[in-house]
Image (cartoon, rainbow, N blue to C red):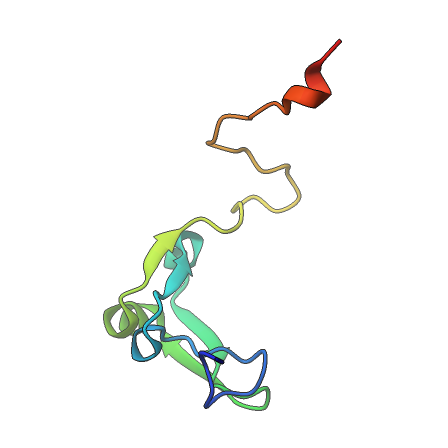
Length: 88
């Protein structure tokens, strides 16, 4: 079953709650005054104050990208070594 059945394919809505899925937002967007997102189609977009979006969507925050462009991302997770690759 398609979750976003009232939206064009690939034009997911910015609000997950009406569809029973969580809404995620990159924490680095908190530095921006506005957010712009697809409005369920590939031809329409909505610009909204970021604070209003957060109040309405109540997104869960996570870091999806590093704020410093061009640098290799640092992982806060331990690297797990693959046992087969580490045999000598």
